[in-house]
Image (cartoon, rainbow over all chains, first blue to last red; front, side, top):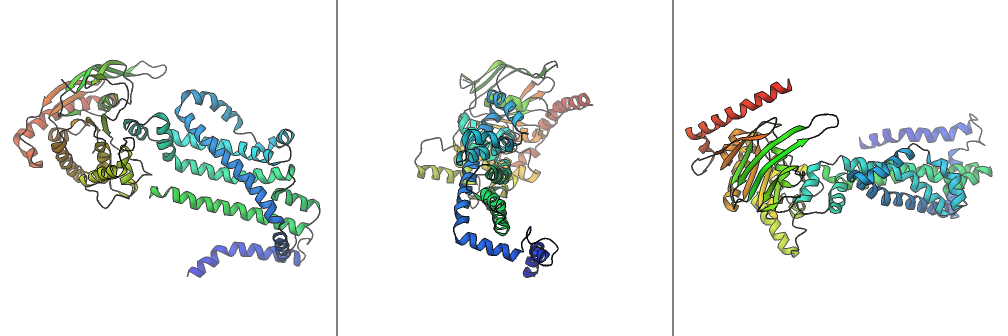
Length: 249
Length: 261
């Protein structure tokens, strides 16, 4: 029975793989624009074996981790303090509201001009893109915390910072983690699109470099790698999230 | 000297573009050390607000509140508070919740653990030390909250409808537990409730409040014999007191209902 469930669950993916393999082989699509899956997988093996994948992949992951990490480091405290301080809120909220709907990818040329082709421009873009979702989730989460929890902490003699970071932020954790999860997905989008346009390494660069050179099989291989990385990152985050929220019962 | 003094306390709410809503008008009340005083009244009479003012959570607008002779200006561990919805930290276990208030006191870890364990035992939660609040029943949660508050040895205990969210049976058990704790600790307690029987059973004195604006109509001393168990409430004397208080509260509850309609 479990085997059956397993088959049902993975059948769409298997069908997709099968269609990918057969469509070019049967001449339904040009083998040039969509190489058969087996050919792509062979390229993937080659890319992995010669170390290209690891080098570009590590470069990309470093940018993603640094950008998202910075966004969390800045966004959580700022959002939490915003939710509790009228003054900070008055200063930051209009800025956040104005910048929230702006597509952060529009900043790519500006950041290229200011920060060049190195890591800084990509990290900055991911940081800026992820900052607002993280900040808003911290803000909304902390605002929704039952005031008697904060009162309890204060009646035990805790000061304002202790109340915010010891009580309000942990209490807001479900909403906060949901915000970070959507920021994680966004960070992959920003990473790859910025590496298309302003990089000399990284998985996004690899995809566009291979595509420009007409090496379509390895290009598809790199795309698969990015998709798998995104999927794995999200699953890992879910596992961490469940563990951190085990108290919800 | 009275341990707690409310001195002509007045409290209003202002909403933009509307006249001020007077929640509490000219409240004066003194509470002696070791006394158990209930604030009894219909919802909306400001009894919880009065407790929050004493707790220091809400700023005092007019009049003053003295705690052992000193003006209340903010929350402090001298006034332990138990809330209706327990206000436990849901991400902390029973043990961690009860230890929370003690973390600030510079105690050796072993001594702290011993205190925590003694309070866990006091509220009969041995075996649940590592459970999260979400895994406990309402009565157990409120026991954790009471233990957490008592563990820091407050000078007075403020309870805001602490058993209001519990079913009738659990409430009765909690009454016995609370009376037991009170007999041992003799802690001064202010107890907010709208339940007349509960107020009569637990209190030395009951302050009856009326609504719109909230004020203290009457302070009644409950002179029942020593509370040896719930049977005390079956005496004719207890019935008379409940009847009388109920009639006092009912007038205002009826007013409140007609005001809403």
